[in-house]
Image (cartoon, rainbow, N blue to C red; front, side):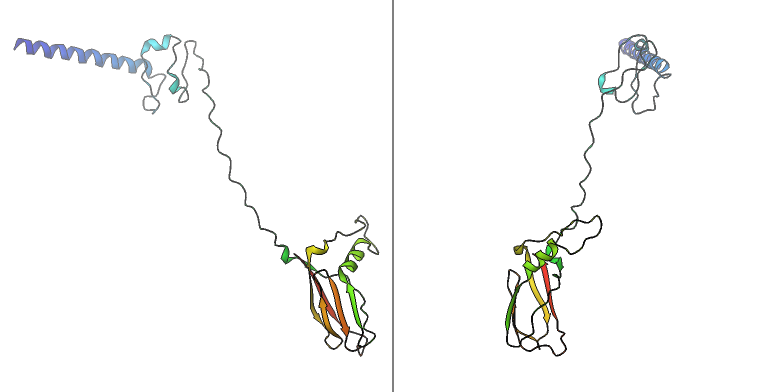
Amino acid sequence: MILKKHLIKKRTYFLTISFFLWLGTISFASPIFNMSSPNFLPVHWWHLFSFEQVPSIFEDSFTVLTADGSDGSDGATGAKGDKGDKGDAGDSFDSSDFFFYPPSVSLDVSTAGASHSYDLYALYVDNFSFPSATASGAPTSINVFDRTALNYFVTDYDTSVFENLSISSGGELAYRVKATPTNDNTIINIVFVVK
């Protein structure tokens, strides 16, 4: 029975001393650290009077005062952030959407039954390479496409004047005069399309 009382007293004494030391930690540490902060680290009063630093794993979390009252050194710089997303590639260029009309030329339809041919590509290059006039500050010629870079079309023509009409993959037009135009006026429409 006596032994039981002695153990109880000894245990009470130990708890009392522990509680006292814990209170001592609060009283010395609370002027510097906010105990409600998630970064709070209990510091015993003797740490305040030495140059001992808080373990390095806490350096990036808060500022530690050294013995002379100045701030501690800054923590390591964080890693660089990820690069931003790349921009959109943009709309692709569909060259088949690009077409133009070749320069106007005079076709011989003066004799019924006569056959004729014209190299329309060569006429286009000649007109664009050597313009009759240019605006001030403009280049002296217009860039041209290669012969094989184009598709050639006759979209419409006067069937009363032209017959056996064809156009080659190289831009050569061929036809036969069916009849001369009655009013010296006829039409043929040609388009160059970029491949």
